[in-house]
Length: 327
Image 1 (spheres, rainbow, N blue to C red):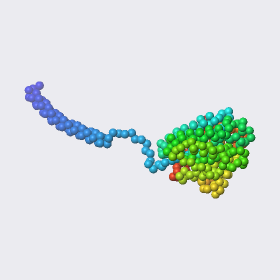
Image 2: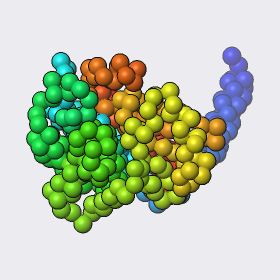
Image 3: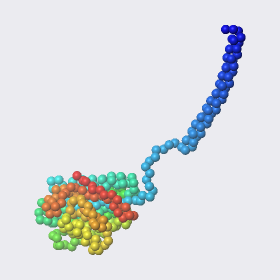
Image 4: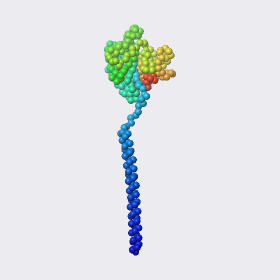
């Protein structure tokens, strides 16, 4: 290659080097600016996150507008003192203890959504088996009437004491049944009833300022929980199981004070009937099993149960219903 061409090529290379250095300096300046901007953004974001504090997992919100509810426990037809192939006083005690345990368990579930600090206990009658209710009864009892009263009262007192450990207030509403009557039907005053003796003894056994007791003053008890008003009756006043609906309608047509619902026992079969006015009749079962009399005379079965409701006292209605299965 001629010398002058070599000189020209070298000069061109040198020029390219200078241009490359210039471009490199410009690139470096731009890259530094980009790095500075990125760092600045990251630093600002970091400070912003720090200023908000650490992230906390969000729990499901419970509305502060939700109002307290109250438990309603219907304990009835214990037939304490009755003995059958699958029922005895000991089994009765075990099943009622189970009913109380289930009540507490379900209340804890309800408390996840509503405060439940008060429990209303309906003592619905036939708490004892009795001795002279029907011919041949003597062959179906495990203990005499005095022992039945003592045992049923102690079981009632233990149940109320356990509830008082879980609720800030317990309110009792009492009703007597036909198995508690003394002597033959009509032989003595209706007030002479073993169920009432059970209740009186229970009240004496449980001493608590948080226990309120509503005595029975009529053949039924008109009960109120806030704006919820209902009738507590035993059910022997009705007679046949198929007559419940007609009797409930008659009671609601100004025969009794205004009420919303009716709670019955006696028939040993958990049932809910809805009236035309949307009022309901709740029939609660019994912890007893294998009742031949109920099967023959009442056409009723004996799956051991009791009943638990939760009440909205402000709106005056039942919010949830539970059959407590005790087998």
